[in-house]
Length: 118
Image 1: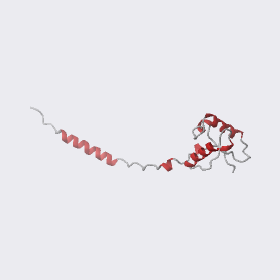
Image 2: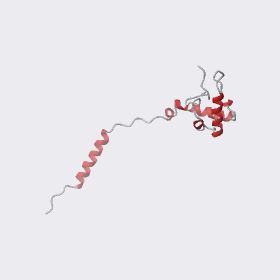
Image 3: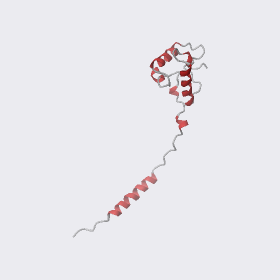
Image 4: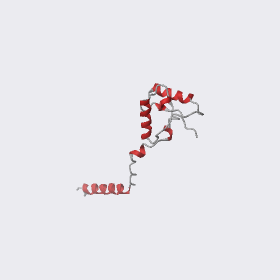
């Protein structure tokens, strides 16, 4: 004779109840971060400290313009007025406006290419 078998539906029900209990015991997810908070300025993205490779990520700056910006920053006299984006050779008004708009979106309106005097 065959041994009595337990019904399969009972095991499925036990598994479902265990899964629901584990899911209820799991901590809640943190609320999603709003896009405005994600786009906040990161200190490591300061144009006055960016390497030429990082400057290439700015809109309108390719390899040559990023290198020119880094060279202009290196040659700039810190005792003088701050270095503006339009002071970089090969960077026109339109490109400077695009870079400044991109920086403004990230909470760095008016970010200069050189560190401001304090």
